Image 1 (cartoon, rainbow, N blue to C red):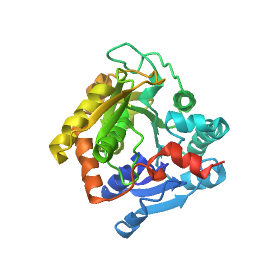
Image 2 (cartoon, one colour):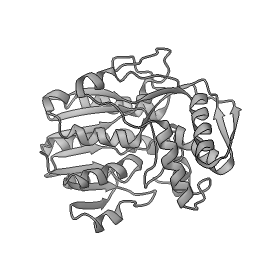
Image 3 (cartoon, rainbow, N blue to C red):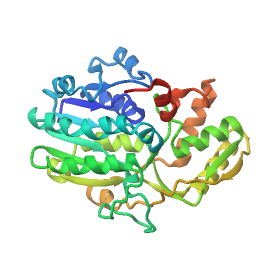
Length: 332
């Protein structure tokens, strides 16, 4: 069993949930993050003595190299994520999503880590009419964010002989996290349904694969328990429900009615977002036995419970929205 684990970007939406799960399993966890959306893992230090938190920029490779030293496992989660945020400042995106990546891989090689797990994205497929896009399907990245994921995947392949690397291409993640994002499909629609009693649907006919945040983080934890010969140099799609956006909206509408008695109106809007794809998860099911346990409705329940308990301005608070926060802080 591994002991020392580094989460680069461990303060993010997925990383925050993953951090606590790893702590519960007894791993010595170090989180390296800028925490620009807030530090939602600080309180975990009161519960666990196996957590180290380091505020740092992944472009500061000297500092990061010192953190990677003596680590056995590196989860590589950090980037400017989602399409609008990556398009906001192309020079910034270039410096973080592209230029910082290979130095991290070099540091992993130099420091002789055992295992590297990279969070790519199923949006790397871009546009496809295929009902089951598997890992060998042509990648057609249509945004700067997608292109950066493709670039990083290709860099990783150069280090296949140096340590065990596994690339995960998650579907669009949904559900509650202490570092909550409300700019992801299911989360967006649930937020509008609960607080505004209507749901804006842009387009609607585009297909989106989805995965609950608990299932994705369970997968990441389980990867540490699998023999490296089984997952070394492998790429896996990770998702569950392939749904049209309009159908996701209908699920949210029905769930909100059951939960709080509201019957939100669905409002269709035009969109320039042409991404549409349905991913196949046959490979990860057959090779790793990974089957998600939660669905879109579970995410709606989790989010609704959070909204009920916390009287927050979820429409204007920039901490919930990557693009708005990036515009606000003007990171450089």
